Length: 182
Image (cartoon, rainbow, N blue to C red; front, top):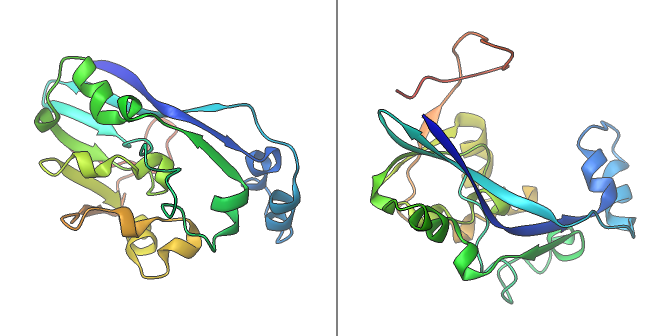
């Protein structure tokens, strides 16, 4: 088995955004929106796993269209004021996979950790793969209200019909949840 890290551009977020996910207080949203400090540029990554049963891709990275006018909802404060992205077309996941010598049709499974743009922006490149998504994430991301939570579901491909998982298996090796796909 071999694991390849593919970088699909860079992102900057507000410095307080890095801490906000660990704080349970409601004011954390205001902290992020009013923060004037930016993180360093952070790599946007996804992982290609060469497995004996087939190629597995974990997440699909960001789209090079992420900064095109109209791509991000104009009304969404986080996407407009709290994120900066740099992704060239040649940095998208499809180019990275092909540079490793693989064909996109060889990707057997695409396992999505979640469906925000920096993880799901390249999902449209994989119509021949089985897309695996948790039940909760599918509920939130595919709902009409998904964009309020930061899910750009208008950019998800029309053919997207993910295999829904519940992660009901027992805890193993320090992970809270897991699912056997092979």
